Amino acid sequence: MNMQKLVAEGIGTFWLTFGGCGAAIFAAAYPQLGIGFLGVAFAFGLTVLTMAYTIGPISGCHLNPAVTVGLAAGGRFPKADIVPYIIAQVIGAIVAAVALYIIASGKPGFEAGGFAANGYGAHSPGHYGLFSCFIAEVVLTMMFLFVIMGSTHSKAPVGFAPIAIGLCLTLIHLISIPITNTSVNPARSTGPALFAGAWAIGQLWMFWVAPLIGGALGGVIFRALSPEPSAQIVGK
Image 1 (tube, rainbow, N blue to C red):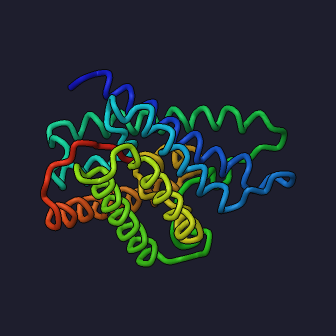
Image 2 (cartoon, helix red, strand yellow; image 1 turned 180 degrees about the vertical axis):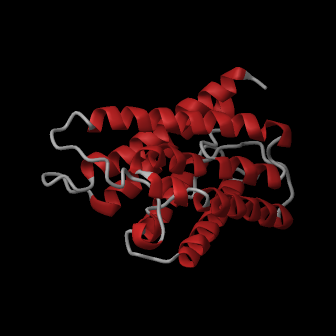
Image 3 (cartoon, rainbow, N blue to C red; image 1 turned 60 degrees about the horizontal axis):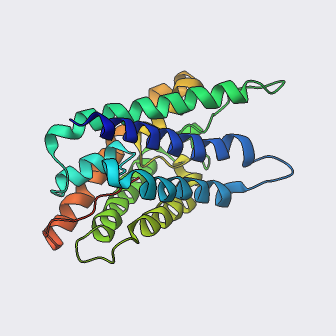
């Protein structure tokens, strides 16, 4: 495995977690800014857009274990490289969460609270139950992989995939922030969960299982529709 690819994945996932979760922690509820759900959704989309153009040529810019698994299921990524990519992504997300915690704790009266973690039931922003949250995460991750597979297809317009993927992630957040606070990415969920409390760790399993299932489904379905190998590989 090329170490440059793993370092790029770690840096890219750091940026996704730091940028997206940072917007939620620092700016979403700030009285003078108040970017709200819309701002957080665009923050996550912009992290993918910027990293896809930056590290796409190096690692493919997956930034997400579900994307790595989905691309492998779709025949776009070597299965032997799945575990090293996932390890790099999780490390990047954890380092980002550490940085966010250090910054956030510098404010007087700081309390970690939800810390942009994902949850279901009482910890869902809209108090959606486990089954609803599970289905949302599966379907949205499946469609995310479907868009990634299609926009990076060899017949797709070259150079526009990051835009489609970034906007897709923005749309996903607009749909599901009220449901699960939006995961579709096990690495992104893992970093903040370490600082949100025991409840977040206890619910973290769902934000691994559902996105991985959804990612694999998206890859397999698109491969069945259009099995041609891709010349480009980018992702969340």
